Length: 354
Image (tube, rainbow, N blue to C red):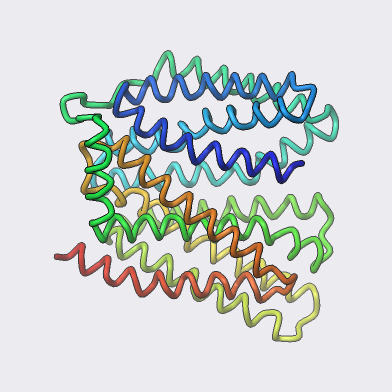
């Protein structure tokens, strides 16, 4: 049932980013965020009061549809408000803060569920949603310049065609999807690696969320420091290269015939630097992806999000297909992806220089 609700959540999230992204160009960023949070609250309430599986599924769908505004509308507001290196810095800072979610979310949710039951989790989410609704209603400014936007159906298709014909946009969309695909692939493989192979307890495995958070924060911090003396595309290349070297390290570790503790330490180090590299690259990809489409940031953001969520879905599907329980499979999957990206980033750099 948990896998089914998660599948419904991702489906609704993908539909939501399109709706709220396009909607933010129609009725403004502020309204898109506020109404999205309101929909999220309604979905959370339905989950809280659900007394059968159908109502729970409906609640999860509505909840995810509303929650998706936090992804696409936030990115759109950032693109409205910042340009150049300042925008790269902001994306890096937000990525560092968001790194805490995979660590704190499961930890807090697990504690609440263990002591009070799963319904209290939804109660907490309702309260959090109400707080977000209040602060957004009170403090969130409108960043849309209505004079720059022509939100007709024809303009959506025309913009989609322009984005499909722009090599930079396509490459960045591919990069964002593939990097997120590696992250979600890790989440799906990690229980098998650390619980089944290294015999972690549930509480010990929960500690790995802190490793993910720390590595992403280090990557975002390193990106911010490098932006002071380097361009964003060069940082993306360095991040991809670091991640690729880390996957080679992960592949050879199981072949070195080490004792269990040594193998575990080296494997965790490999995962850490793999995610540091992603933390360096991903914020800059998000910042640069729609550089050529500033006048319709909501619509272009929606189309971009739809594209990379489809890529993420394909990646997670492939990880599920190739899963064997071996420690080498996930690093091999990452190596193929990162090697391809390292080739493509050269074309991206040439296009940027031109």
